[in-house]
Image (cartoon, rainbow, N blue to C red; front, side, top):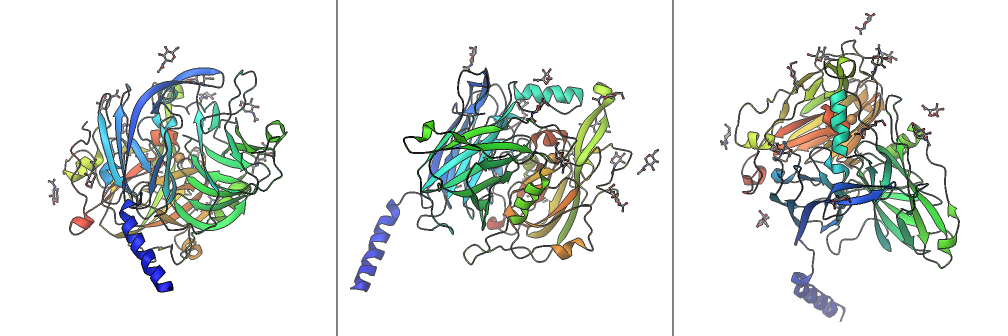
Length: 559
Ligand SMILES: *[C@@H]1O[C@H](CO)[C@@H](O)[C@H](O)[C@H]1NC(C)=O
Ligand SMILES: *[C@@H]1O[C@H](CO)[C@@H](O)[C@H](O)[C@H]1NC(C)=O
Ligand SMILES: *[C@@H]1O[C@H](CO)[C@@H](O)[C@H](O)[C@H]1NC(C)=O
Ligand SMILES: *[C@@H]1O[C@H](CO)[C@@H](O)[C@H](O)[C@H]1NC(C)=O
Ligand SMILES: *[C@@H]1O[C@H](CO)[C@@H](O)[C@H](O)[C@H]1NC(C)=O
Ligand SMILES: *[C@@H]1O[C@H](CO)[C@@H](O)[C@H](O)[C@H]1NC(C)=O
Ligand SMILES: *[C@@H]1O[C@H](CO)[C@@H](O)[C@H](O)[C@H]1NC(C)=O
Ligand SMILES: *[C@@H]1O[C@H](CO)[C@@H](O)[C@H](O)[C@H]1NC(C)=O
Ligand SMILES: *[C@@H]1O[C@H](CO)[C@@H](O)[C@H](O)[C@H]1NC(C)=O
Ligand SMILES: *[C@@H]1O[C@H](CO)[C@@H](O)[C@H](O)[C@H]1NC(C)=O
Ligand SMILES: *[C@@H]1O[C@H](CO)[C@@H](O)[C@H](O)[C@H]1NC(C)=O
Ligand SMILES: *[C@@H]1O[C@H](CO)[C@@H](O)[C@H](O)[C@H]1NC(C)=O
Ligand SMILES: [Cu+2]
């Protein structure tokens, strides 16, 4: 009898399989890039959006699905969209950074992005990758496990997205243009936001804030995204603990905390138990800054967690103390707790041997600029190279052997060794160039990124396109190639796509370069990217079609 039922179940399962939605299916989306007026902080401005939404629409996929997104540009600016953290195995043409993997989609034009989401599950984000458009052109990517595959943690009763970002009263392109003219740092934003809302603003007639409604006794999976341009954010729900289960669409060993830290580009899934006795609780996104050099927007974004009981809306709001803006202790406590799940189903396959060992300094510089305030301009660099964007796409130049677009001589070590985290050399100039680093297919890479004290130390959330990496080490001071590796975690280091190089410290990552293409590596503080804190790896083809980049799609934009 039991085996008869089993056979029946198997037969039914096989019959139903083709009807089950989502399993390796293709999901189509249309992104109309349009301008729309929004009122925030008592004033109205027109912003560039996808489909008139801020934040933009959410993409849903199951692991293994194909996403086909037609982006149509109806605005007067160039547009591209990047699928942040999607590995894009053998599909580099669809990665999205302007002048790296593609030319921009010009006004009136369209491009169809077409890629699969494989070997990852959780929350990621998409955003514009040209100019400063990602300030308003961004949204979530929710990657569910394959049908029938459970989460490695207790299933939640509900699922909720919380997109953290920044709002400027001015046009963000005017903000960065003004800064590039003066050579100084750009204005900070006027408020942080949660799901597009700043929260209550005094003297504003409209009460503007996002409300998350929960039922007592249930648990919720909160999908958190930092879509801000230039600021690390602390996230907190008053009166509730949060259990971290996933970062950057990889599972981690669960741990409980009252404060989450997210750098721009990072995503984190947490479980929240609605275990309080009803009422209303303040939800906050506030800045973290560990450099006295840097000015931040200090307006905390506020939302409300509200229990779904009749009296809750009238209940007093329960608040909690914000983490201090400069709380390095809170930040490093959170980062130290992150470990790969490293289970049988989800092993951490950390490269044990290293073929290519790289050391890149990351930091600021000051170059002459006669028309700027005081005759100089703040720049940023990796290994003293301030990256110059080409006027055509690097991937195109690589694939078609176009000479004169880039060189492949990016230095693997700092050109000059110095006390990196000290006060720095007196000469704070940088060189510039479109210099890439070439990696043969399947190279096992160790990359140490070292902050510098040139002008001042500052943290940098660095993002690698097209690959995840393992974060094997992190410390303050200067990296020491003799003593530092002894402290590496090669067992269960966290796997991510964006990681913060600590202010006045270093960070070591490892990855296998098995995805042919050109992959951008850059600071995810947009201001630092603009200043030149970026470079790219060329990963050469291996053998045969399964290890080679296919030809470009026919509708790929041209410059
Ligand atoms: C935004 O509002 C301004 C002033 O009312 C108007 O001129 C403009 O056309 C609006 N823009 C959009 C995209 O609706
Ligand atoms: C997307 O790519 C797949 C695989 O190359 C191809 O079969 C499919 O036709 C493409 N779809 C669109 C809409 O371009
Ligand atoms: C930047 O801030 C300064 C000082 O508040 C202000 O005068 C200027 O207009 C701002 N620039 C932009 C582009 O908003
Ligand atoms: C935020 O910054 C402004 C301007 O620097 C300052 O006047 C204000 O007191 C600060 N607010 C808080 C809460 O730190
Ligand atoms: C953080 O800021 C507070 C208030 O400005 C200051 O008293 C404290 O010394 C700072 N802490 C660190 C670690 O910089
Ligand atoms: C420009 O130089 C003057 C004189 O050294 C100094 O007081 C001022 O702070 C400088 N301005 C900036 C923006 O660095
Ligand atoms: C580019 O050069 C490589 C190596 O010389 C060659 O194998 C490849 O076919 C060339 N590609 C094109 C599109 O010309
Ligand atoms: C490097 O600079 C730091 C900070 O100024 C200092 O504490 C350290 O002693 C210096 N190291 C060396 C080797 O000079
Ligand atoms: C920087 O300049 C000062 C004053 O000229 C000099 O004493 C110091 O040695 C220089 N430092 C370095 C690292 O070259
Ligand atoms: C960076 O490059 C500039 C320009 O070549 C040079 O003057 C400076 O000494 C270099 N600095 C370092 C730290 O390598
Ligand atoms: C790069 O450096 C060269 C030589 O110093 C300079 O002429 C050129 O203007 C610089 N280019 C950029 C984009 O900064
Ligand atoms: C859009 O990109 C093209 C190709 O790079 C460039 O020629 C054009 O000036 C850009 N247009 C705008 C409006 O920025
Ligand atoms: Cu940076």
